[in-house]
Length: 160
Figure 1 (tube, rainbow, N blue to C red):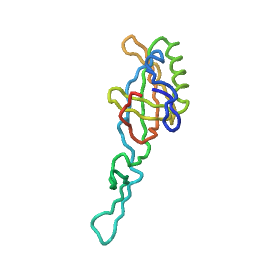
Figure 2 (figure 1 turned 45 degrees about the vertical axis):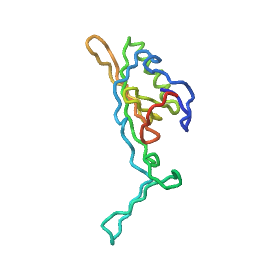
Figure 3 (figure 1 turned 120 degrees about the horizontal axis):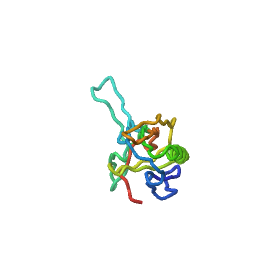
Figure 4 (figure 1 turned 90 degrees about the vertical axis):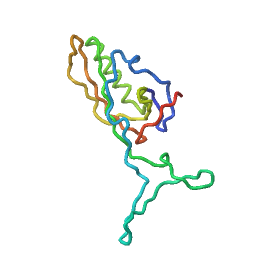
């Protein structure tokens, strides 16, 4: 994860949030691969035709007009990430407070190394943590983070 400007320009190097925030562990992400509804594709129906008329965005490529998936503008999508926070009671509370302060401030990029996907986001809703839970003799707290994917879809991760 890293902080970025509103236009996505990196403001810091990538950090491993599991190393930076003691006891924080990624659990899952819902909606990570969702793609928002297309905003710049239009259809029209006419009484004289069985077929719908479609407008697709085009760009110039080698002197000809072509359609490309990269020309489609998408509505933003919602991603719900869940983290586990383990460790002593003091560590868990400290980590939750520090991570909330970090993630609530500004725009961030996140990349998922399992899927090799990256996206820019802002936190859009209530950051909720569960009551203390136990897995065997290990206490933990779940932290749920609602995010808005600013581009409406993820992109392939670049190492920059």
